[in-house]
Image (cartoon, rainbow, N blue to C red; front, side, top):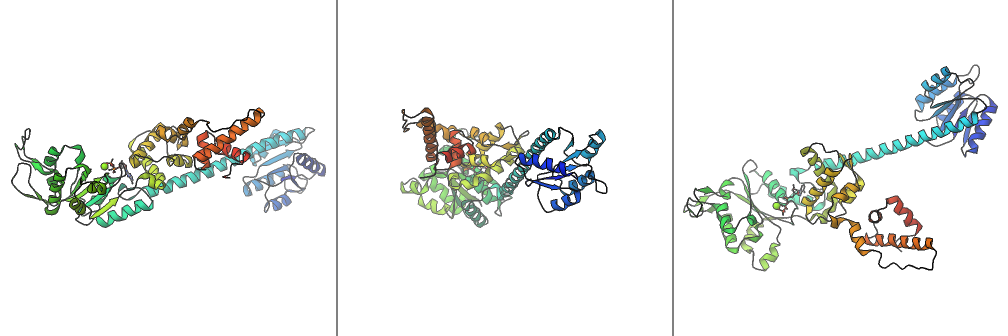
Length: 478
Ligand SMILES: Nc1ncnc2c1ncn2[C@@H]1O[C@H](COP(=O)(O)OP(=O)(O)OP(=O)(O)O)[C@@H](O)[C@H]1O
Ligand SMILES: [Mg+2]
């Protein structure tokens, strides 16, 4: 609330006294000898405070009436009531009418007013803080809500970046077709998630989705795993067993990590893809299936082909559609929606999680790391941060504590130390300290590519503290 202090009293000497008193404290004053005029003026002007006499003279509305009317019109405007008597009754009436304070006009009026005004200032300050906090919370909730909505995405694939949208478009396009799909991408980027989405969106959705990790099984066993075996096919094969291709009949088979199969084995896979027929190990019957294959790898198949480790004919067959997943570092703008999504999921899975929201600084902290383990690593970081945090709002410090040590900006800075700083021992101590502080701030800026927020973090300063030094030392780029 800004504007003058409005004083309403029918006695000119009291008005004069009040005006002097407030002006001496650097305040502007508007005086009225009756309540009606004050109300009229306040209906189109702002004021900081009203000091209102209880008894405004015969034939006039009383201070209490004026106070009630002001209260209902301007509920935020603080009112102090002055009275000639100072009886308990008056005090009770004044407070009931909505006055924040009540003062008797006596020889100590000046002191009492000073104390009362200080009290009002504290109340105002408090109200301002509360309003600011409410605004901030509203904003925070709106951001988190927006992210949560964006996070409730299709088939559990979360992200708003152009590259992930492109992935979604491809999934929708290829899903209905009975053709293989090749999913490529670094570890933890969501290859299996994509394979499941393709299956879910296909007409086979109600049929089985079978997965096999080709790299996790020795090749001699892989054949039996995929195609099954007859009883006695090898030592230990006591029973006939169906392979994954049979189990996936009518549905989808996800061949994960196909990058390491031998060339011979690749030829077998190719044959099944072409003819949808195979024999069990040690079997003679030719089994016919209807299986859609989705293959995935984090290996670079182009290189593998160039080096003669991957069959180009198998590649061509699998690559009816290639879905390439980007590393998370290439789409850090997806980090907020992903973090929000993982928080929501974690809250569903685990009881007693206090964190409900993620602060803007925490979002920044999440996005300050490049996640070599991609989305899987981000998920772990989010869960660790949330699990260790104790408040309702996740802070940047919570996130920093959950990131791996190499993500801590401070870690790299401390190894660099202060090498390169030229101290001049002839200068007075104060100037040497300033020179060093300025050097540290500039150094932090350079390390963070002039991102001031990160530089502040690096130095363990709040943003405001950093900005203060930034201005003091004139640290603009040149
Ligand atoms: N876009 C995304 N939205 C939501 N969750 C995701 C996304 N991408 C990955 N995840 C999650 O990250 C984790 C890893 O995903 P997934 O197993 O699909 O990755 P991958 O590429 O198959 O990894 P790897 O190469 O290690 O096998 C899973 O928990 C998955 O749910
Ligand atoms: Mg995988």
